[in-house]
Length: 369
Image (cartoon, rainbow, N blue to C red; front, side, top):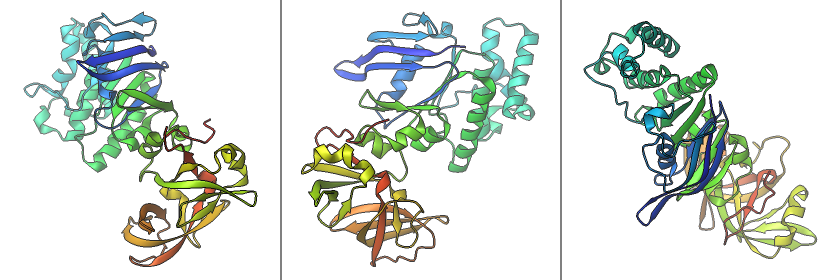
């Protein structure tokens, strides 16, 4: 098995820089997820690693081996695409065995590997079927099985769940996570879906405009984003942002948004004191905004009054779309909340989980851990 290293990697398409100075070390047996919006460079990074695109500058290593000039077939990687790319005229067995046959693998070894992979993926009963006789989820498992039989050093997944319905995505997501645990191999996965990234990854690499914004564990990305883009991209619904001023009043710091003034907890005061009197972007996640009487225990609540614009009942929770002045924001609240559209409600913000950002650089003013 092997880790993967990107050293100052660039990819240019004419004047467009698709991947901009990517430096990244992926440990052996790690499950790393590239995440970001369309056009951010995540799939291009994966294709550079696979050898499907040529590197403009820099080096990529698999283990200790530089693979810049190594053909894709010799890189000891296996790739699972968004489209299943199965041969429609072949059975499931033959689709999974095809790559091994091209490598002149002995027939008995092929049979052993295909059946072991099929058993692992729960598709043993489908080995005689053609792809058209399978559901989308079953076809995706065949595509994964075709990669498994090669026993590669690194598995690459390029948005493999995009063609599946919501329920099947959840099931297949869990299946891929279990597969990683069983195989103990390096997995590198590309998605635009931050929920997939949060639930599957051991670390997440967030990209935007070809640049790596932040790489960390899912929880650290959620708790300590380095900039507004990461803060808004990680978490669903995304973080609320308010244009505010940090004011000092009688020795206490407040976040002043015009229609609200929220006290900064004493535990955070020292980190923000140097920015008093300045414009700041105040960020708070929907799950840190509560209706009065349903606050989470042990928090530092600050009151804010808002008008209910839209209410969405989700069963186990309610999404309230609220207005304070002309500013709209979202709260993720207890399902017992009785707030109605058009009503003015008293809300509480958990200031222990507040975030402040510089409006010019968009970088966090928090202490990043």
